[in-house]
Amino acid sequence: MAEARIHVEVAYALPDKQRLIGLDVPEGTTMLEAARLSGIADQFEDLDLDKASMGIFGKVVANPAAHELKAGERVEIYRPLKADPKLNRKKRAKEKAGSA
Image 1 (cartoon, one colour):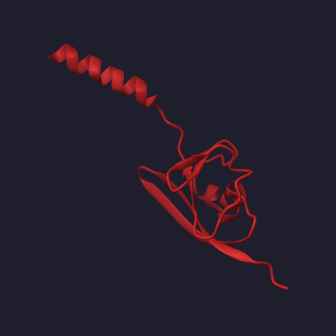
Image 2 (cartoon, helix red, strand yellow):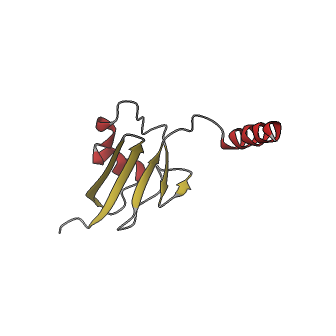
């Protein structure tokens, strides 16, 4: 009997390079396993799948190694933030107040 498979996508983007890879994986495949199976890490020099944050359609998943995918889901691999968004907002507000 053939193993049941589902179709999922794995996505990663840098400002100058993006990849969206569709693949068929066995039912029960986790986010992390799908990311590895996609080969996406081979296309981005600094991408460490074991340390990367991941989500499904914009919602972060705390433990990608344990989250089993459903058919049609897209694994999104997130880049680390270079700066804290809260600090950036405070800095912009302070600069705006200073120039007013």
